[in-house]
Image 1 (cartoon, rainbow, N blue to C red):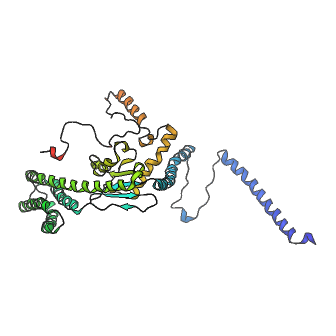
Image 2 (cartoon, rainbow, N blue to C red):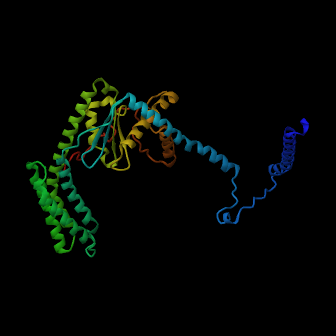
Image 3 (tube, rainbow, N blue to C red):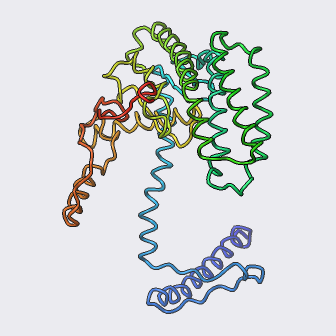
Length: 383
């Protein structure tokens, strides 16, 4: 009776299934052998709705191998991202960090302290923005007319100028009501009045001439220089006081504080926010704890800046561990060998090498042009 029960039936089914599997494997082995020996394999039939988009894909061993090797580099960036999140958390848990971000309002400084919420510094006084806006209005006017100084028959500039004329008059009418220092208002008023007079002349004569633009620029230049100087004094005075206060507040922790400001190419030289930070960090911190980070636009976000700073600091252990120098990864790693390769190629082509002097890893050199030479260096040097 025991052999007729359900255990026996279950065993019988198991044996049958095993037999089917063995036979299937036996059928598959010759097919696999044929593929291995180079026999063509027949593509599986696909439903009709796949046919417009599905073809027979083939990849050579070289293509597959290349893809697999290159994938290592792609995956590296994913791994970098994972590690960076940990590095950033650890950096912010142990070090104060100051970010200086460019903005149209004279910049923004943020202080990150371990275990505390980020501290946003008070904004630059509104005088800065007002004078900058007035100065920029003249620059914007130049953009309206510059494309047409040699095109007397093209009147495309008129609508833009007429519209901007309305805004210019509104700014002039409202200038006295602003918080701009009273002794600075006459200069801004003169700039706006000159702008309006130039626009009226262009609209009346229905033409833009190189001579007219040159005369207008010559009249505005001395006034613009004053606004630029006063705006710079306002901005620098404000941020110097802010950073001085933060340094005092941090005390001994200042010596382990990191800082970075961002710049695009045109603002790299004489960068204001970086220069202010340098006064308190000193020359030995430059390119060590104080960094100038290039971005692709005037403005960037605090998160993007923190990511860039983390990448710089987080890579330094690689230089120390693999190459014996903590700052190696601050440089283009292939740069030294590429430099020699350029020199070698120059020799083949009989070209005199045009390369900068080599500097040591960990250089504290100012991160902008520093070679002295002839020529104007400030607006005051210009006529």
